[in-house]
Image 1 (cartoon, one colour):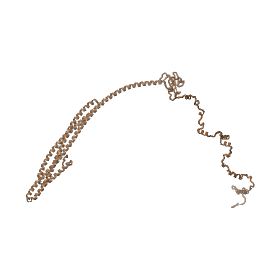
Image 2: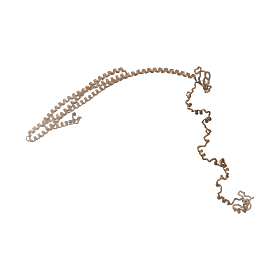
Image 3: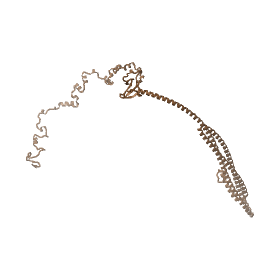
Length: 546
C-alpha cells in the first residue's frame, strides 16, 4: 500500500497522483467559492469535515509519537543486545586465551576448557534472551508499520472529502446559473432582487473566504499527515534496521557459542597432544638410554679392536722391517729378530730374509724342495690361467712335451715344405698355366740351345743373325730400287776417267781466275798495302796524276 507523502513528496505512482489531485481540488474549490455566492452552507460542511480530518490527524500524530517511543525502546533493546554480543565475544576471546594457555599445561587447559564451556552456555542463554527481545522489537516495528498504514488510510479519506467539496462547489456553480436565469425572469422585481443580491453577494464573499480558509487548512493538514506518514515509515525502517541488528547480535552470540565449543575441542586436542608428547618423551628417554648402552658397548668393542690392530701391526712390524741399507741385528722395536723376518736392502735392491741365524737373499739359496707344505694343485698356487691336465689329450701330451720345434714338427708329421716360404712355390694360377705349358719332349735339341740363351744378343748369335737384323727396313733400298741400282752408273775414281779437260772452261767453271789472272793477283796492290816510292811507278790513276 502506498504512503501519502504530501504535495511534492516522493512515493509510488498512486500516492503521487493523489497528492497532485488534492492540490488541484483545493485550487478548484477556491475558484468555485468566489464564483458561487450560495455555497456558504456547503463551505460550512466542508469546514466541519476539515475539522474532523484535523482531529484524525491529531490522533495520527499521537500514534506516530507512540511509534517513535516504541522505536526508541527497540533501539535501546538492540543496543543492549549489541552490548551482550560484545560481552559474548569478550568471553569467547577469554576462552581462546585459556585454550592457548592449555596448550602449554594440559591439566590446566582441561579445567579452563570446562570453564569456557560454562561461559559459552551462559552466552548462549544470553543470546537466546536477546533474540527474544529482538523478536519483541520486530513485533513493535510491525505495529508501527500498521499504524502508519492507518494514517495513510486517513489521509486518503481526507482526499476523498476534498473531492466531495469539489463536487459541492460544482453543484453551487449550477445553482448560480439557475439563479441568474431566475433573476432575468424576475426583472419586474429588480429593485428588491438587487437589494437581495447585494446581501447575497456579501454573504457569498464571506462564505468564499471561509471556504478558502478551510481549503488552506485542509491542505496544511494533508501535508502534516504526509509528514506523519513519512515519520512513521522512517520509524518502521529504523525498527527493521534494529531488528536486523538484533538478529546479527543473535548470530554473533551463536558464533561465540560455536567458537567456545571449538575452544573446548582445541583444549581437548591440546590435552591429547600433551599426553602424546609425554609418551613420546618417555619413548625418547628409553631410546636415549638404549643408545647410551649401545654407545658404551661400541666404545668397548672399538677399544678391543684398536688393541687387536695395534697387536697385529706390532706383529707385522716385527716380521717386515722395511727398507734398510744393511742387514739389521734387531727388529724395529729393538727386540731379537724372528725367523722369517724380511727387509729390503736399498743398497743392493734385493729383498733379504732372516733364516734364524743369517740374512740371505730371498730366492737365493732357497730351493723349492726346502719350502714346506707346498700346494699340489693349480688353485693352491692361485694360478687361474693354466690348462688343467684333464683338458689335454694323450696326443696333446706327446706334443707339448717335445723339446723343440723340429721335434714337434716330427710329432705333427710335417715335411720339409712346412719350413719353406709360400713364395718358393707356384701359385694356383701358375699351376694352371704350367698344366697348359709345352712339354719338354716337344722341344728339339736346337730349341733347347735357343731357350737357354741368357739374352737376345746371344739368341741372335745362336740364330746366326747379322747386324742387319737389328736395323730398320727403311735403311735399305726396296726391291724396285735394287733393280734400278743394278743398271745404274756405279761409283768410279776420277783417275779412272779418260779424256778429262785441262782447263776451267773445259769443266764449265766460270767463277775461277785463270793462272795468268792469279799471277797478276799476286803482284797486285793489296787492300792493306801502303803506297810509297818503292812500290809505285809512273802512271795515271783515274781522277788524278801520280
